Every structure is written in C-alpha cells, then in structure tokens.
Image (cartoon, rainbow over all chains, first blue to last red; front, side, top):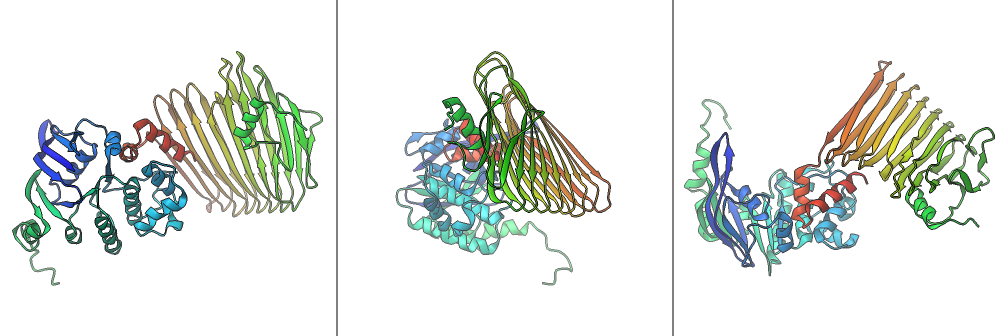
Length: 250
Length: 308
C-alpha cells in the first residue's frame, strides 16, 4: 500500500515559484489497479516521478507499506518494491534486451526465463532477446520492452506513466491485454497507471482525476467514469479549440 | 611442451582468449623472444632474417583456419620494435588473432611497437582481432604503439576488431589502408582510457578502386584525466563509399578530440562522417536505478554495454 500525505512540489521558473503539485493526499491500496487521469499539464507524470523518487517533494510524506520512503533514493525505493515504466523509454547503445531484463530481475535468470517476460508483453522473444535497446527499435517495441522490465522486476507497486504514449492504435490494442493480464494476477501487489485511454480506465478499480496539481475527483470506476465521458469536464477541455469557420466539411 | 607461467597465462587469456597453446598456426612472443611457433600445411610462419619479427604466408584458398600471434611482456624496461608481415593468398578465408599484454611491475617503461603489414589477395577474407591489455603496479609505463598497413586487392574483405580496455598507459596507433576495386574494409575500435593515460588513434584510408567501401567505427570512453584523439581520414579516389564514426562517452576530467576528415577526389565518391562526444545520459542512469542499481552500478552497466 502506498500513501501520499499532503504532497507539494514546486519548481522555480523565471524567478517565480510554480506549483506543480498542490497538496495531494491519496492511498493506493493493495490488490487494486488505480488509474490517474486528467488534462495534460495537470501534474500526473510529476506525481509518478515523485513516487519513483526521481523528483523529491517540496513538502509532504510518502509511505510504502507504512514505511516512510520520502527521503529514499531511486535505488532504495526500487529495492523497497517500486517499479516504474517511463513514458518515453530510454535507449541504450550496446545494452541488449536480455541484459536489461536480467538487470530488472536482479538475479542471473537464463534466456528462456527472460523470454517469458517478452512473450508476456506480446513480443516474439526469439526476435528480440539479443536486440540492442537502441534506436533500431520502434516506439511500440520499446514500450513493450519497458513493460517487460517492470514485469521482470516483480514490484509490489508498479507505476506506468502513460503506457499508450507514442504507440500506434494497433499496438495499443494488444497492450491492453497485457494490462488485463496484470490485473488478473495482481494479488499481493498494486498497480498505478497514468493514462488518458478509456480502455485503461475501464479496467481500473479506482480512478483519480488530477487537474492543476490537485485531486478533482476520486472514486470507483463506476462512480468516476460517467463524470469523465460525455460530461462537463471532457467537453470543456475540447471546447477550448474554436471551430474553424467555413472549412472542414467532414 | 611449452611452459608458460601464471602471469603469461593471464596475459594470453586477456589478449587472445587463450587458455592453452592454440591449435593451428601460432607464434607466441614473450619478452622479446619466441616462446613457441607452429606452422600448418596452409599457413607458414617464418622468422625474418634481417629484422625482428615474422612472415606469415597463407596459401591461396585456405579456408576456416586461424593464426594466433600474441605478444606478452613481463620484464620491466623492455622496448621492442617488431615487424610482422601477412601474405594472404587469393580466395583465402582466415581469422588472425594478434594482441599484446604487458605486465609491468617495475620502475622502467615497457614498450612494444608492432608494425603489421597485410597483403590481402584477390577475393580473400580476413577477420583480424587485436587486443591490448596492461597490468602491474610498477611506476614504469606500459606503452603500445601499433602500426598497421593494409593493402587490399580486388574484392577482398578485411574486418578489424581493435580493443584496448585496460591498463595501457600510452598508445599511438596508426592504421593505413589502400583499397582496390570492390574491396571492403570494416573497422570496429573499442577503447577505454583511465588515470593519466593517453590514446591516439589515426586512420588513413584510401579508397582507390571502383566499388570499394570502408566503415570505420570507434566507440570509446575517457575516464579520470585521460586523453584521447581519434583522427580518421577517408579519401575517395573513385566511385566508392566510406563512413567513419566516433561515438564517445566522457567522464570525470577526461578529454577527447575527434578529427573528422573526408576527401573526395571523384564525383561518385560518397563519404560520411559522424562524431558524438558526451557524458552518460542522465535518464539512462535513472532508468537503471529504478531497476535497483546504484548510480555507480548503473554507470558500469552503461559503459560495459557501450563497449561490448
């Protein structure tokens, strides 16, 4: 279980203080899949990075299974059981997919064990295990490998920052199945996904809406989904774009 | 049976992946003298009469054979200049493993300067592996200055893998190549320097024949206060293609100078140079830390992968 207690995060921009996260308190319970959604720039990715330890909060506490991890490094949080999948997976010259999965697993697993993680994210393991994690891989392939590293790490809390970002619709259809599979075998762990995708929201136990660094809604999927789809908050975001005059006949 | 001691055994393992005396043709040089030598039906190794070094003659059509010519030095203060000439017959397909390991525990500099000349016959294929390694805690430097000249006849192929990862204090490497029609040269250099080391690597490749090609790629890491210079020049004298690349990671107070050089003397010469120098990307370290590695462990993994 992860608890955020009154988290603030400010950055300095042009000598002015900019508040990215404005007093957020929330709990990610065990055995639950929680999705954080909301408009771009609302602080979702920052919150994920604060949980992984990549950023440190200006104030507030972060507790993992009752232990205060606020001052812990990224490494120590990883060891304490937090896994993090980047929105934009990192490329490495020379490091192979097998190396990365092995590092994630933390033990000297063999090739066939590593292949199981690749198969689980829908990659033909034989074609990828010896590939370098470099720019020869497409965005969708990198994203799957990124998710495979989190699976191999087997964290008690997995955080996925916009798994749908940068991949095409068809690849995403397959990825949904990966998350559905993770949802089924969640026992003893919890999953936090930052996402805009309705299909991801549909498999959530709980949904949290974040806007301008504040929680604007929190509840079960059945409570929140009707609010998000077809209602004021969704339409308002769209209506900011003024319709073109006389054009776009479609 | 040749007797080798523990230090020699360790150096041989580092530079030539040899655990024992190799099969096939070989010449092992230790502290300025031949420790052992063997020729085969197709590969003849003979000592030079007027100079220090050996001639290696590979018969035309020789396939799937290898030659090992490692050099080990364990005596402090030894300086040597050796000429090794390789004559590779038409249509041969061979692997040549060279390499030099110096263990210097003494106060004086140890230096091995090896001049290798390759005459690669028509249609022949050569894979050449050269590793450098230094060890020992003596004040004396471990110095290696290899000179490599490659003369490639029509449609021949040469792949060169040059590796220097540890312990060599001073290197000045010069590689020149002349390529005839349809010849193909591939060079993969991997280099890591640390402490106060300096490493200079100079390439001069002349693409003289139509359809010849060269691909020279260096990956290097400069740590501590070490200095590297990578100077690669390609000259296109015919319809040819050439590519050089220097990709470097810089750490601590390391310094790197990359000197791109392209000269096209024919309108159909297509030459490309790429060079990039930078520190390890922060997000690479962060990614590995999220997998539970410390910052130091993450750096080591990134460098190991980069130089693999």
